[in-house]
Structures are given as C-alpha cells and as structure tokens.
Amino acid sequence: MNDFDQIALLLLIIVPLAGSLSMMFMPGRESRESWYFAIFVAAVSLVLSLVIFARYDYDQGGYQYLTSYDWLPGPMDIELALGIDGISAPMVMLNGIVLFGGVLISRTIVHRSRDFFVLLFALAAGVYGVFVARDLFFLFFFYELAVLPMYLLIGVWGSSTDFGTFLRTKEYGAMKLLIFLVAGSILVWIGILALYVEATNAGSGTFSLRGLQVLSENGAFDSQFQTLVFPLFMVGFGVLAGLWPFHTWSPDGHVAAPTAVSMLHAGVLMKLGAYGIIRVGMFLLPEGADNWMPVLITLGTVNVLYGAVSAMSQTDLKYIIGYSSVSHMGYVMMGIATLDNIGVGGAVLQMFSHGMMTALMFLLVGSIYHQTHTRDINVLNGLASRMPVNTFFFAIAGLASLGLPGLSGFIAEFMVFTGAFRTYMPLAILAVIGAALTAIYILRLLARTFMGESDQQWADLKDSSPVEMTVGAAFVGIIIFVGVWPEPLLRVINVSVQSIPGV
Image (cartoon, rainbow, N blue to C red; front, side, top):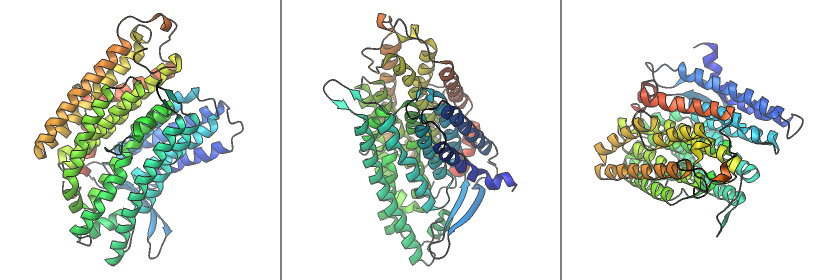
C-alpha cells in the first residue's frame, strides 16, 4: 500500500470539511470569492473521488484503501476506520460529480453565499464519510452530519410554492424533512446500540463493521435477534431512501430546496438510506434480511406504482421529479429485496444512474425557474424554441428515467426486473407496469413544457447559461456512457455484491 492509498479516504472527508471551516473565516458573507473558493474545493474533491474509483482493484475485490485511527479505545473499541468496496466506490464518485456540478451552478446564490457553501460542504463531507466508514459509530456520525445541514439549506435558501388553494413554505419543507429524518435516525441508533450490546454479550463488544460481521458469521446474532433488529435499519434507513409510506418529506423537500441542494438531495442523499440497508442490514443481519425481504419488496413495489401515479397528477416540475425519485428509489428497494446477485447489482447501478439523471433534471428545472419564476407545466409551453439545449438535455434525462435502451436507466432497471422475475414474479410484473406509467408522465411533461408553440410571454427567454450547459453536457455524457458501456461500473459493483451474505 502506498502513501496515497493510506490517506486517500481521509483526504476525501477532510477536503470538504476543511473547505467548510476555511470559508467560515472568509471576509464578506456575500462575496463572489466564496463561489470561486467553493469551486476549487469541489474540484479537488471531484479529482480525489475519480482517482479513488479508477484505482479500485476489482480483481482483488473487498475493502481497499484501508486505514484506521484510534478514537475511543478500550471496551467500546471505536475507531475512525475507513475503506471502500465495490458498492461504495461508485457512490463516492457520484457524490464528487454531483457536488462539483452543484457548486458550479450555484453562482446565483448571492444571499449569504459563504454560509451556504459552509453548510453544503459539511453535508458533502458527511456523505463521503458514510460511504467510506467501516465503524458503525462513525457511520452514524457522518450520517447525521449529512442530514442536519439540509434543514438550514432549505429553510434559509429555499423557496416557497403557492398552489392557489394552499401554500407550501420553505420552512414547512425544511421542518418536515427534519422531523422524518430524525425519527429515522433514532431507529437506526437503537439498532446500532442493540448490535453493540449483543456483541458485548457474545464477548466482543465492538462497533467495527468487520468485527460485527465476523460475529454474525459465527452465530453470535441468533435468528430471533436478527428478525427483531433488521426492521429498525430497514425503516430507519428507508425513511431517507424515500420508502413508502415514510416518503412524504421528500417531494416537499425537493420543491423547497435551492437547485444545488435538490441535486445533492435527490442525486446522492437519498442513496445513503439504500446504502445503509445494504451495508448494515444485509451484511450484519442476513437472516433478518431474508425474513423481511418480502415486506421490503412489497413496499418497494408500492413505491414504484405510487410514485409514478402521483407524478402523473402533478403540475409543478419539481414535484413531478420528486415523486419520480420516490418511484425510482422503489426500483432500488426491489433490487435489494430480491437477494439475487443480478437484482442487487441492478439496485446499486440504479442508485448511480438515478443520481445522475435526477441531478440533471433539477439542474435544468432550476435554469427554467431562474428565468420564468414558475415551474407550472400549465403555464410553461413551447420552451424548445427558446431553450433548445435545455430541452435536449431534459429529453435525455427523461428518456433515461423511463428506461430507454442505450441510456443508464435501461440497464439498471433491466437488471432489477431480471432479479425480481427470478424471485417475486407477480411483483416484477407490477414494477414493469410502473415503468410504463413512468413513460406516460415523462412524455407528458416533455410535450406540455417543451413542445408546441411558445407563448409570447416567453419571447425573451434565453437558453441555459454556458456553465449550466457544460455541467449538463457532462451529466448527459455520463448517462449515455453508462447506458452504452456499463461494464466499468458493473465489474466494480458485482465483485462486492457477490460477497453480501445470502446473495
């Protein structure tokens, strides 16, 4: 192991944290320099994440870039242990890409811009920490660090939406998000403490993920214990993943959040929930997972159908994308619940694919809203003639969302469907119906918003800015690349999926 491998993951966390702390001492809360410095920090973070992914040895598999630092030795045995495997490596890269894109397009944040980036980088550091932590205590610590800044990011820099008959304020969206996610965190923390106590009773009290997995493999956690504790993680992490019926915070949070936060929220943050179910629930409690997977795949199927039907009834662009995210996270839940190597691999690929296409959608909607000050598809029409590049990018993201062959969403959903048909055929059929509903609301959105004659009130509209076009083009390129050639991602993902107990 060279010196870079020993410090790479620590740098991944330290860089955004150091950027956040440094910005707190920068003069001028609304200075333009804040954005330039934020771009630098995000660029370094992106390069680190790309290098780490590219250097991951899929032939070797398992955890790599291993390092650890004692934090609380003795009976509790807590250490800052870091490492990535084939499941977390793509998520690390996803966070780097979306973070850099979100910072680039945040030049429009002029009110307290310094404070905005302070919180944004704290959130990003938390996300990185969850994906690379090999200790349950620090995984939970970083999980909370990723979640809590969302309250202020939405409550201060978000926007309220007037639907005529009722008002959705940014404060409402922020508070609803906080209440749901804190409730989920409580369940997760109870589950973590239960694992520690049971490990202590077995003679080896530890928070180490590897140590707990060894105990699980040696029979320290009996079937009854696993069956009782697994739903704590399934529901606790599932809240953040938008699992029905605990999903309602997500669309409201999406709508209220500023563009960059929506990109990170839907693109990366929701993936923490699904990742937690895999990393903690499935690796440490395989018998409990096996017993509860029929429930999870049923709820995931409801996610797919409910999210799609709800998206069909919305007229606000952000609400449509928000409910679409609920639906697509349903595919992730279904793939996980198959306990099939193809299905679980498809779930992880879907996490990456959905992160890219949803971040792109929110970027484009933000560009439209910045000029029109509305997201109502009943008002927006004929934008293709005014915003051709925006329209093209949105079409690519939408077609990826409905699973068009040649785009990233197709191969991910295909793998999930394959795994589901091999294990739960009736629910797989319902999921395919959900995919058809996705096509309906996506094509409806494209037709009503972008096609047809442009209204005279949009005569002065300009296309997305050069920065937005650059970010959008990069996201589109990744969506097409993964759709055409998914092998570089899948070879990394599959090597770790095959190591999940019971898969």
